[in-house]
Every structure is written in structure tokens, then in C-alpha cells.
Amino acid sequence: MSDNSVDILDIKNIEVMYDNVILALHDVSLKVPKGKVVALLGANGAGKSTTLKAVSTMLASERGKVTKGSIDYDGNLIEKQNPSQMVGLGMVQVLEGRRCFGHLTVEENIISGAYSRKLSKGDIDQELEKIYGYFLRLKERRKSQAAFTSGGEQQMIAVARAMMAKPKMLLLDEPTMGLAPQLVAEIFNIVKELNQKEGVSILLAEQNTNIALKNSDYGYIIETGKVMLEGTAESLLNNDKVKELYLGISKKGRKNFRDVLKEESLNKKIN
Amino acid sequence: MANELLFFMEVLVGGLLAGTMYSLVALGFVLIFKASATFNFSQGAMVFFSVLAFCGFMQDFNIPFVFAFILAALLMVVVGLCTERLVLRPLMNASEDTVLMATIGLGYVLEGLAQAAWGVEVRRLDLGIGDFPVPWIADNLKLFISALDITAGLVAAIMIIGLFLLFKYTKIGLGLRAVADDAGAASSIGIPLKHIMLLVWSAAGVVALVAGMMWGARAGVQFALVDLALKALPVLIIGGFSSIPGAIIGGLIIGAVEKILEVYIGPFFGGAIEGWAPYVLAIFFLLYRPEGLFGEKIIRRV
Image 1 (spheres, chains in turn purple, orange):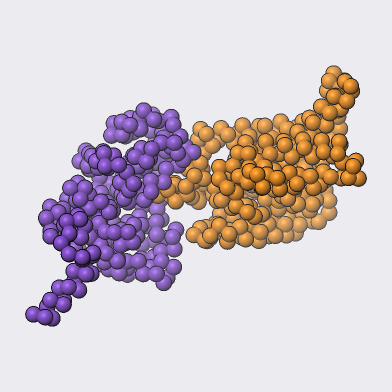
Image 2 (cartoon, helix red, strand yellow; image 1 turned 90 degrees about the vertical axis):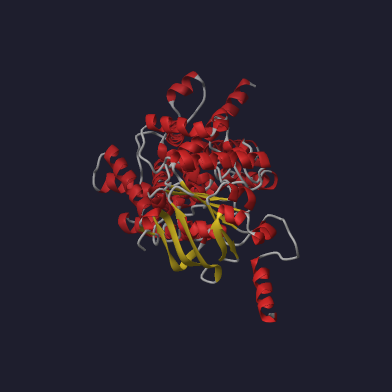
């Protein structure tokens, strides 16, 4: 409780239920230090999105609820806020699957991100130019309807749109899903740049463990709603179990941490 | 021959203009459908409620026309406010079908409130525009077209242009279009859904008022206005539930087709096919183009 000032986000032992019956997170604790990139890794259904939505308070619209634990963001206890209040506090989530406004132009999409800010037309143009500085591709396509842009461009629109809200913290949910490797690298370069130049803290949910860790400072691995392993990005990249289970450098038929734990407890009993 | 063509033109233009009255009603549905993906069953009741209040202000309190209109419009904003606060917000995370059912209930409440406040008798509404042919057009173009129809056409055109400008060039318009595309994504970037809902329901209320004034002037301000909602259904099916131009074109098509069918084919059925011809047309659309002419996605069945 004492040195909270360095962590912009501090999640303590949260449990999340959907519809009052489905337990999606058992026990997740994680911290995001100010100005850092933290990766949240895990397979489909592990609870990455749920964790992000618990933080951005988007859970309520899916009838989910944080039933235990606490979330502390930038000195605020997150409880009854709604997403637009969270945006006001400087926390913006980029939802999984890009979710652009298909009928709006690229530029309208990006401008819509500034909705919560009281900006004049001139200010908006200025911000827009700054954002285009990071997303050069989008500037060329500013007048196209978002629905007709490529997957990579749509992901850029979603991030650019979120940046227009001038966030202190970005929650990125699988920004590289379904993108070609070249685009994945391009997206991560932009994310890194935003982190370094704009000082945005980032919590990044990814399945693409390798590239996510290479672009992060710290990482957490979750499985079935529990944090299984955490550490600096470097230590995770060099961890044998992570290599085996998430980086595809496999030895035996083990598929996840639960198998590893089972094996270890078996070994303990034998010894 | 020339006379027959002239007669056809007269039927067509009369039908198109009458169609704009349908468009006005349909417009209210489209606004709400865009923002909440719900068919608003209370739209007919809103038409009745708003125009009855307008008549009440004018006739019972002797408030001049313009002020009565402003008061009635403000009243519809209050209705929008209450609807957002008391009905929509508690149902924020409920399914669209739940909201749909809630609008049916809201309709009954509005009908009851209107009659409790202003009585049940049919009121005559005189806008100072007659429902008879304009002499100038009759003399010069040899077409007999009702002044009320022309007014309705103009009013519809003004409302469309106004709404178009509102949606295209204002911040809240951008917010509305964003919500219409993806409400979840819109709220993730801080667009407050409740403001958008308030805007949409208020706008739909004012549109209902205007539609009610046009229809009230033609047929009297009475409970039957509630059933206008039914007339808007084929318009929406043809135009598409989520498209404002669709509501306009759909209304024009229905207006023109029903008049032409009535005049030329009606006699073979013993007349009065106006009442059901639009629904037959709507069924064809449902079979072959269920998203309507301008619909953005497959419509929800209601």
C-alpha cells in the first residue's frame, strides 16, 4: 500500500463471475508500473480479455462482475465507474477484434476517440496530425470508409482512435490477432513508439507470446483464470517451461502449466 | 391521351407527397433503431401523445401556435429524458428483445397519460393549410394537388436535411453514428451512451410531433394515430430499418404505389386496396430483399 505511486495499475486477487454463475477469473493479481509495457499472456479462454474488461469496467455490459479483490488505478479504486468515466480518468481499452466504426471514414473513426475531450476544431486537427505521425498509413486512407480498409489498418484505426482520448494507460486486447507477421511487427513498433514518446503505460493481452514478450518489460502468464507465472520479459523468454509451453520449443507432451504442476507433484510424491 | 397522362401524373405526385407523411412517421423509428437496434413500438403512441399535447396547449390554454409547438417539442424532450432514465438505463445490459417489450409498455403509458391529461374526444387541428388542391398548380399545371400534401413534403424535406446536417457535421452526430455502428466500441472510447440515447429519443419525439401535426390536420387528432405505426412498418421493410434515406424513399414508394394501385387496379378488387397493398409489397421485399433498399444489415423480425 505504501509505494503505490510507481504502479499505475494494481490488481489484487480479483475474482470475476459472469451471470453470477460462470467463474471466469479465480485469482488474478498484477501490476503495471507507470510508463511500462506489461504483457498478459495465455491461450484462448484463459481470462486475458476478462481481466482487461474488469479494469476498463466494460464487464458490466457483458453481465460480468468483479466479486472479490480490488483494482487500483492511478490512485482510484475501480468499483462503480462506467467506461466513459474510465476514459475520463485516462484509461482506454482497445477491444479485441478491432471494432472500428465501419460506416465512418478512417478520420471520423479517429476523431470519435476525442469525444470525451472538450477540444476545438483546431485542437482536433492538431491532435490528428500528431496521431497521423505515428500511423502514416492511415493518413493516406483518411477518407476511406473504415469497413473497406485492411485488417492491419483497422487495428491501427482502433489504436489511433484510443490515442485520441489522450490516455495515460492503454489496454490492448490481442492487437495482432489474424494479422500477417510483417503487420504484427509494424503494430508492435507503433505501440512501442507510443509507449516511449507519449509515456503511455500499456497492458497488453496477447497469444503471440514471443513477439509480445520481446516488446514488453514484464509478463504474466495466465491459465484458466489464474496467474501461473510472472517475471521480467527477459526471464520469461528464457524460462524453459515458457519455451516449452508457449514458444513451441517442446520436449514432451505437456500442454499447459497444470500438466507441469501435476507432474511436479507426482515427482515429489515419488521422491 | 394527354388527359390520361395528366391524371396519372396527378395520382403519382399526390401519392408521392402523401408518402412523405409515412416517411415522417418512419423516420422516428429509424432514429431509435439506429441507436438501440430496437423497434420502438411506442412510436405511434409518441405521435398521439405529442400532437394531443400540442392541441391541448393551443386549444385549452390558448397558447399561440409557435409557442405551443415549442412547448410540445420540449415536452417530447422531457419524455425522452424520462424514457432514458426510467426505462433504458435500467435495461442497459438487457437483451434487445427486453427493450423491445419495454417499448410496448411505454406505448401504453404514453397513450394513457395523453388521454388522462387531454381527454378522449377527437380534436380538430387547423394548421391554416387546407387539405384541398392548390389553385395555382391546378390552373398552371392542370394538376390537383393538396396543399397539405405539399406542406408535408416540404416539412419532410427540411427535417431530413436538418437531421443529415446534425449527424454529419456535429460532434453528437458523430457519436450517434459511432454508437449505431458499434455501441460497445463507442463506450470503450468514452462516448456516453446515455447522452446519445437522450438525443435520439428527443429527436424521435420531435419527429413524432411533426408527423402527428400533419396527420392530425388531415384526419383529426385521435386515438387512431397510434396505429400509424403500423403504416410505417412496410415503409421500414422497404427502406431498411437503419437508413434515414431509406425511410424517405420507402415512404415515397409506399405512397405512390398504393395510390396508383388504388386507382388503376383497385376497381377490380372492389376498391379500398390502399389498406393492404403496402403490406403485399412489404412481403415481396421480405422474400427477396429482407434488408430493404438501404438497410445496412439484415433486419430483425418484429
